[in-house]
Length: 359
Ligand SMILES: *Cc1c(COP(=O)(O)O)cnc(C)c1O
Image (cartoon, rainbow, N blue to C red; front, side):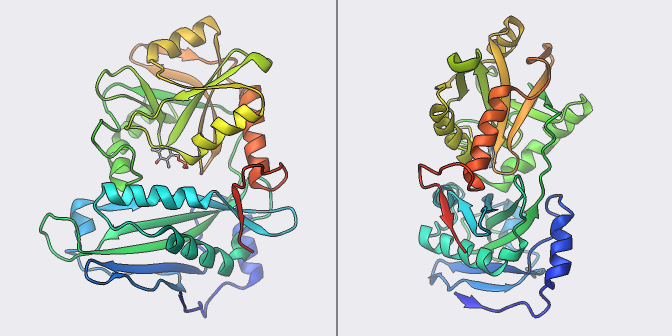
C-alpha cells in the first residue's frame, strides 16, 4: 500500500474534542484509502491519502446508472486501549457478493482487509473510548468508466472513509414503525441481498411516508404476497416469543430479498449462547398483530452495525396500530444488546474469534 500522510492532520486535542462531540457522520478521520480497478489491469496498488474531495468527469457512469455498492463496519476500543474490528471478513465477503450482483469487480478479501487495517491503524486516535461508541468504517465502490453507454463499467474506484460514532442509543425510547404496503424494498431476482446505494435511493419516499405517519422507521414486507415481514429501514428485525428461559428469539428467514446482516447472523449465535431457542421464520403482518395482541410476542427489536440493537415499540399500518409490550425496551432485547456490545468492546469472552485486533 502506498502511504501519503496528511500534513494537515488534526492535532490530538482538536481531534479528541471532535470525537467527544459524539453524533454520527459529522467528522471524518484524517485519511482515506483509494484503489483503482480497470478491466485491463485489474486492481492497482491501494493508496492511503489525506481525506478530501475527489474530482470526476460529469459523464462518469455511477452518476447516471447508479452502479455502486458499500459496506458498514466498526472498530471498537478495547479495555486495554487496543483497537479491534468486529467480523471484518464477513464484510469483505459480503462486499464481494454485492459487487458480483452490481457487475462490479470482486475485491479480494485480503486486499479489502488490508485497506481497512491500514486506515484504522493510521487513524486509531479517532476511535472513541466509551462503551457504545466506535469508529464507523465505510468501504464503497463505484463505476468510473466515462461515457453514457449502458454496460458494466470497465473501470471502478474503491474508497474507504471513517467517522467516529457516538453512543446515540436512548434506552428509554423504542422506535415506532410504519408498515409500508405502498412501496416495496426488494423483489426476488432484484438487488435486495446486495448492499447497493440504489436500494436506499428507492427507500427514501417510503421513509418519508413513515415520518408523515408520525413513525421513526419504515417496515418492509415482501413484494409478491405483500404479507411477509422482511426488514426495518436498513436493519434486520427480531421478534421474541414468550419470556424468561423459555423464550424463543425469531428473525425473518433470508428469502433472497433480505439483506443478510452480520449483526442478524451474530445475534442468532448470541441468543443461543444465552440459552434461548432461536428460529428463522416466515412471519406475516397478521402474525405480528395477533402475536402482540395475544401477548405471545413480547419484544421486538431491529439490528444492524450502526445502532447494534434498537427496540421496536409501536407498529402502525393501514390495518391499524398495535403496540408491543409496554413500549419500553424488552429485557431480552437489552440482554442481547449488552452481550453483543460486550463482545465488541472486549468485556465479554469472544468465543468465536469474531474480534480482529488491529493495534
Ligand atoms: C446493512 C444493512 C443491514 C444490516 O446489516 P449489518 O451487517 O448487520 O450491518 C440490514 N438491512 C439492510 C437493508 C442493510 O443495508
